[in-house]
Length: 299
Image (cartoon, rainbow, N blue to C red; front, side, top):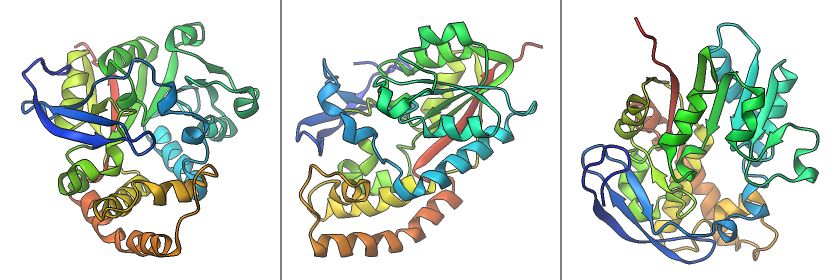
């Protein structure tokens, strides 16, 4: 099996990674050339791996902080101020609402469109449906690119819907981060099989290069993702029920309440995780990779 990014031969790296929701096992193949990982096998039907609880309250108390941080990144790369924004994988639409309140015209793409969640937001089922509203000044892919079968095709389609000086902002889990290297198959953000792709700094740059785009790494991180990555991965490595502390924070009502020892240990580890979270971010090996992608300028 050759790498989807650089076409070089891949090798099996992890023989058994278990989905905490269904208890099904998957494998991860790895490309030594560009350090890209892929999940296999790819399920024929993804519906049972998602569901309402996957979308609901994912950020919880950090939601306002998360949206404000992402809005600052948008403002940083938007020389003309507020314009038209497309949020691919918009979830419950909270980022769209945040940007709309700041003067942006917002559109979204989501596989699970629900009237009771999205209300009067302009949320569409796929990128072909957004062509009528293009071009966009900003297209955001917040933890979305790792979910799609062909990330290169998605980037190419998104580039075709940008204004000439527009930008795609991408955030994905960084597979070559400190936490991933330490915890291996217990790393929270493997999230198989929902995460079909596992990006490194090298592989996402090569992906942009192949599409004739320019990639600008942003010295940024998603703090809550990193913090929970260290916390939950440590709990997973201790043999506790996988990802249960995270699901406790998300308020999943369909699960048994978290035991007091498990709960206390989770909060204690979250405090301790501040140290490796800041260290990883400081040396450029945090758990989230954030990049700006633009059309390449012809001279």
